[in-house]
Length: 350
Image (cartoon, rainbow, N blue to C red; front, side, top):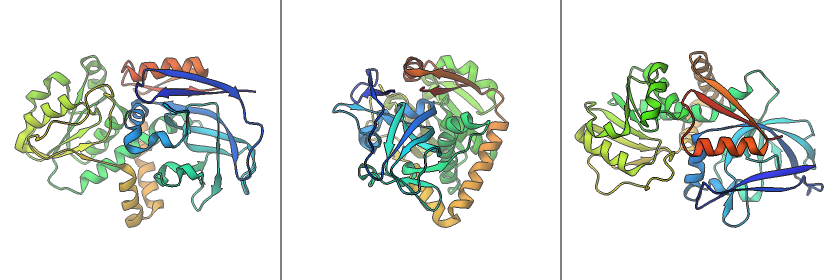
């Protein structure tokens, strides 16, 4: 049986290589072999590649020197096992490579399953956890939205702790994580301004997610008032500088989340007007709220928000791709920013 991995050049995300081979026939004791059934591909995955060295995203699924396997979220099924308590047929949701097959050292945990492979031991536990996932009609939405809106939910929760926040300005407003944050924040009564490429404005405006949508070249004219927060999903230094300069003393906080503008210069010139950008790392907020609320309450609150978002998003269209060729087509489109904001791309490798 044939297997393949889509490898990405770690120094140039445009360069890809399809590595083909046979499905592993022999497993070490403790290993399980999984076949990937489907996964979502979004701008969030491009952020994993752009920030792969800085935040360890390349470490989850090892690849040959100079190459990487960008993680995605989706479903996989155990097809062979030498791990105690793990039987073939188990279907899981979690962090996967862009591949047809992969192996893990999977063990049962209190809330599901965990990959105990040595190379993942020091990585954030949020990404090492997997849940049993019987098939449902909403699987594609789970792949597409759960990881993205979880970040949105946690960001909104993080920002809700500051009662002085009145307005959010979001870069990469067409990204699903920014859309989710806009939706959660506006439910709390905040004003949300989205910044995006000119070609996305006509699609974003009718969705009702933002109070105002502006092209990036208009960022220098922003006037939002005191209590404004800039949430940066793009990682574009020139946009960050324009927002900080425009808002000045009205900017209460500047938060770094992603890097969808992966080719743009990183970081921001120092000093910037207003507060200096600070990184938001979702697993830190998960640990905090799990300790305060309990994981079950955290999951219940998020699940309610996710269901409400999907119910209120009739504009969301699923676009499906099959096989290595379909994946490469979708990857290039997402990488180059040629995906419409109202689309969600689902890949079936086999």
